[in-house]
Amino acid sequence: MPLPRRFYARDAATVARELLGAQLVRVVAGALRVGRIVETEAYLGPHDLAAHSARGRTARTEVMFGPPGHAYVYLIYGVHHCFNVVTQPAGVAAAVLVRALEPVEGITDRTSGPGLLCRALGIDRALNGEDMCGEKLFIAPPPSADQLRIVRRPRIGVDYAGAWARRLLRFYVHGNRWVSKP
DNA sequence: TGCACGATGAAC
DNA sequence: TTCATCGTGCAC
Image 1 (cartoon, rainbow, N blue to C red):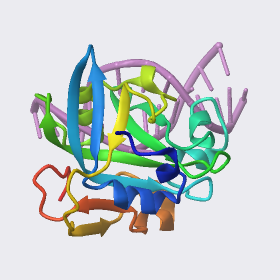
Image 2: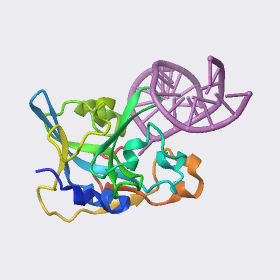
Image 3: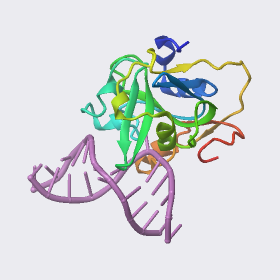
């Protein structure tokens, strides 16, 4: 069962934290690829200088400004794709970047890193704007209510963002071997 | 119309 | 530390 849209309609840092332990589900040619989310980053909106939406509303960032619970997928360094979920109500351009998954089902390739997990799950720009409350790509609640030890760190690769680069907006599961950079 | 560069990953 | 590789965003 996909998480309801109201789950995503909250602030990005809360969503990023609560997505840990949830299961990202991708359906490719009728087959399931499932991974447990173990690492995320929150991008808060146009005031967050590390967020793409800080450069304003453009063709690329359009989905970030749209309703919550949709996929924001973009190409980075001309080579890799990054997968985000849009958060907050329409008009607030915030999102959560999913950085690492622990394989659960139907996954053979590596999933530790935003580009790698997109490759492993068959996520590319064709899924940009995809409704995460649909059936091709969604996130299911954590199967168990285990209390996770969550680590907060500065986000990766955003040194250009000044003080915003030092904010603790990266979240991961303590001690999990699938985290991209422990 | 041109150009510098990036929310990465892999090789050296 | 360097490089692949291309879409974006912004300068001319």
